[in-house]
Structure formats: C-alpha cells, structure tokens
Length: 167
Image (cartoon, rainbow, N blue to C red; front, side, top):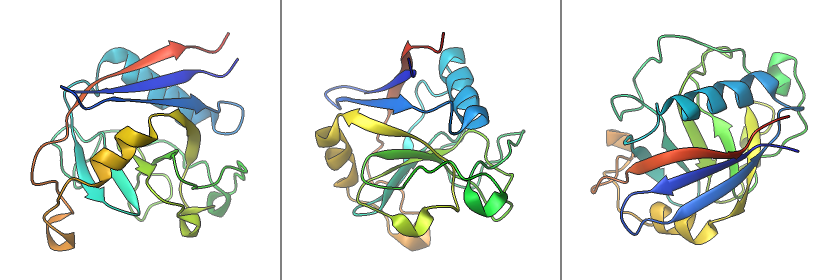
C-alpha cells in the first residue's frame, strides 16, 4: 500500500490528498514523509504561486532562496533515475536549484500540466482529491516573477499528515 499524504490548509483553506510512490522515488518519498512526520511543514506557507503552473512551499523562511541544510539525490531521468512519473495536474514534486542533487525541503504541486518538467524534477506522487483547494491557492494574487511570485496574502499549511505509511 502506498503512503497517502494530506496537506491541510489553515482556516477554510481545504485539504489536498496525494498518493506517494516510494517504489519510483524512494529517497524523495522517505525525505518528504520524514519531514511531514517531524512537523517541519506545519505553519509554513506556499511562498510561490504561479497560476496555471505550480504552487511551491516547504521553505523554513517562506522564500524560494532558503537552503535546507541538507540535500538529497534528484530522482529523475536527467539524473540517471527514470521514475516514469509525469508532471501532470496534481503531481507533487521536489523543488531544487540548478544542481540536480540539491532538493531538500521545498516541494511544488503542479496546477496545470507542466510536461517540460518531466525528467528534470523529482515527481513523487499524484493528487487524489483536493483539486478545488489547489485551484483556490493558484488563484491567490501574487507579487509577480520579479518578487518570486509571492502571494500577496499568506497561504499557510496547517499541517501535512501521513494517513497511510509503507508497510
């Protein structure tokens, strides 16, 4: 049974549920689950919102430029690991900088199909439900690309729960 991650948003923000794929991206899934179970993501925000593309979160200072203090190997085809996972609407994937092995805590959720990311970023799950919450977050006005597409109003993650864990 694959693990299920639930991203619970603050207030009336809603819930998004994802099936994670440890057989395809074992390091990435383990890293995400470990961070979620430790409470790392609780209270952080989706600090980058690009309608029609992605929403990004998981930075301890709620900016794109925040090193995690550790790095994991990028599990994607351009880095020698073909997971077979696609960046279609609702995919959850790890953010990174130019270094293929630089992912740490930041992740993104694909708002609309973004196949240009396939093989270049570590997708590790897909949304089961909560697309209305994804759309609601993606519709939040942002400051634009010159300011990291930061939402004008904070979009806070109350918690990320792991509803089922690998056996």
